[in-house]
Length: 404
Image 1: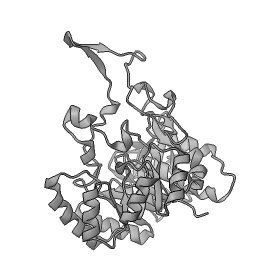
Image 2: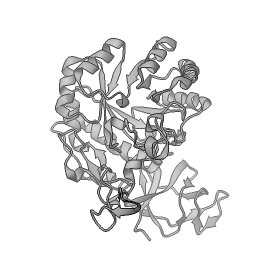
Image 3: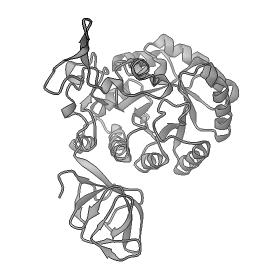
Image 4: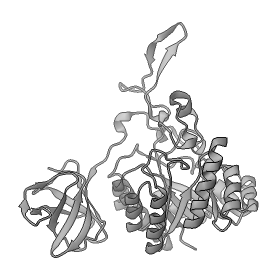
């Protein structure tokens, strides 16, 4: 059986480089104007060209999102953008709107079109419609069970993609209007305020100025907030159901998240070649190291249980490790590190690499860029450390939060 593609988010050039470095087969990214992640760093026209060059150099695939739901005023802008993308020639465009699909088909007919999860494909009749219309891949709704995916596969030959990890929206595959209603920022245009993560109170008609608390505990209620999706324990079932591409959510997450998630799922996907598929304890440990709302399998296994919702903010966004820096080069007996946090001699750190992973090292020496010994380095400085065997350029360095 063909191993499913591992598709990673790239909200910035650095995240793109990180995703490829840790083993992503493909990346998806976009510009602020036409992507559903307007608050991510995203890419300019020149940035898109540079991204395409890097992905090709690394032997990966590049998918560009054009998946907003446009209004009339957006049409001529999308046309101009599509002419740019035609010249860049990514491996696919991700669209959700029928009008954008038609425009892309006319302007860039040689670029394959993938249908975004925003299109809410939940049945095989919809899947067959998009296949007949010329789509090359369908990003299935997050609300499907594995058995429903299997049934869709039986009715179409087009590629199927599904999310396996990351944030889940309270509304159907992100088709949310809460943010527009409360903050005049449309989730369907990439400006979501994450309103489902807020703490809510009630008001009573006769007492409009009195806010009545809703308690699930002494911190209030977060009844709309779902835990994050994690399907690492069921990749074999998804692959057997006919999924061609495993997608990781997170264009607005940091490189610490991108590196850890991609590296972990890379190992898990590669292990699908050996059956029975077994989840390694180190994978679960790795996925607990960076910020999340806790994990759930969503609706893949049936109705999401009550435990799949994060009702307590106190248990959310916890992580065990923080990013220290990124390895910029390894030569002349020194490792050059671009710091993203303070670092001092005596700190214990670990390198996220294929060599000394899961091992911590004491920082015994730090040198500044001129080679002079120093006792510490600060965020955004570049320092030199003694070489640790196996460490590579672009590897991340991190440390436990309880580390002294």
